[in-house]
Image 1: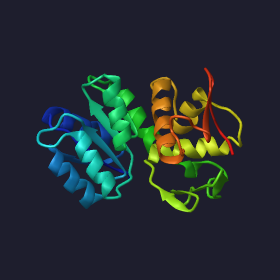
Image 2: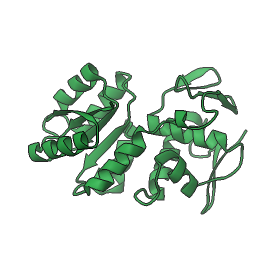
Image 3: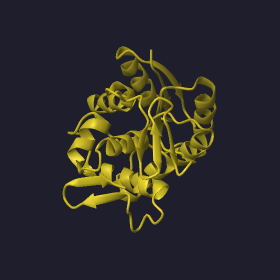
Image 4: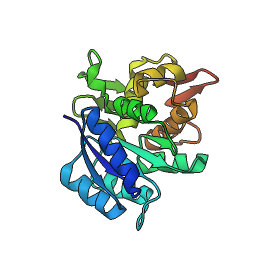
Length: 226
């Protein structure tokens, strides 16, 4: 049974999320502050974290930064009342995998949880290491290196890189990435894909402002080349 940690200071919302997630077959832990969230993430090692941004004490961005520093690389879904692009980008840079904006529908949330829990191990041939342009991606160990140096990626960024590498130098459309990486298309915008690609470029390109590995094919998608 998959274990989910909910870090949410609105008690009624947190308990409602727990009840609905448990009905959907998940084991759920609930805490109500950033400090408790960090401690719980370290102690229970959940399979996924639902993390509110606006928390008492330290906020969700800082919680996310600290658990990533601890090497906790499970998927993180941000719950935010903010809908500004800068906050979404800040969340992705801190290591978030997806977000929903309050108020959100329960079905939307459950779909995002299901999609985040899917792994590249579900795909045929996923256990074979992938190699492109000095990048080595090991799906079984979920590890990435470039020119022999390890590269730390969030689970979502890892899956996105795997999809681009499997493209074999061909263009991978944004719609294909939404389907293959996120698991659905209706509830995720292409801006989400673009933000994660920007994060990959910061980690892998010599000059992220002038990318040579992950190139944009205007109005279509992206290509990973030698």
